[in-house]
Length: 207
Length: 78
Image 1 (spheres, rainbow over the protein chains, first blue to last red):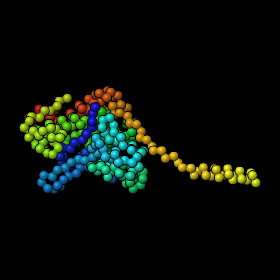
Image 2: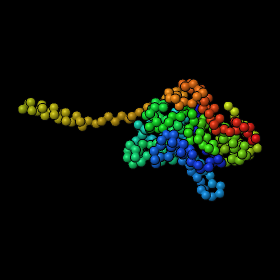
Image 3: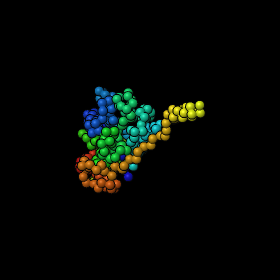
Image 4: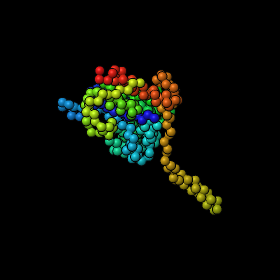
């Protein structure tokens, strides 16, 4: 069973905002709402790093935990989605989310703060797959079309990788081992096992 | 006199009926359809069988590898 995840390779992200544009175009996201955005650390300083951020579809999502009307749900693929017909636009999810993923349109159903909108991993919502109602509320359902999220597929440097967590992890591991650095960072051991120091030959997966 | 009292009671009953509390049952989420069920549109990517979970899983795995993993096209480190 697939478990969908994103990862952004900061060694590759060039802050082109192609992922942001792809997302906005694919889902016709309104002005003032950015389901995805690129954050740059130490902007202008040598060694600056950019990272593309959106909903990370957490396995234990804090937005789900705090929602007073229980509008969130998780699909079988591990994508965290919400039902806009149940959402009351309270904003609790935006306080709970560590990534700032929940967005609130300024001219929505409740006036100044409309119903919450966020990255759907291009998986639409509870409406019928590919229906006009689903597109209007949540955007395209690319997963049901057998495609991966638009942001990841459009990324020019392939910095942003999206898909089944195991596949994504394999791709990222191969890159880090090939470039010979990156496995020393905090958390690598938790995710991939003991650091290799960049000496081990990468094992690429062919399909 | 009795008719007037009855009429008044009836009017009060009808009038106050509008004051009853509205139902406040919590709306429930709609059930979502699995992504492997497809969309029924012409935009579905070719190469997998709509409605087959295993085929869908394989389609996404192949798409991720071919589209995002350049090391699967060239020998790593070469």
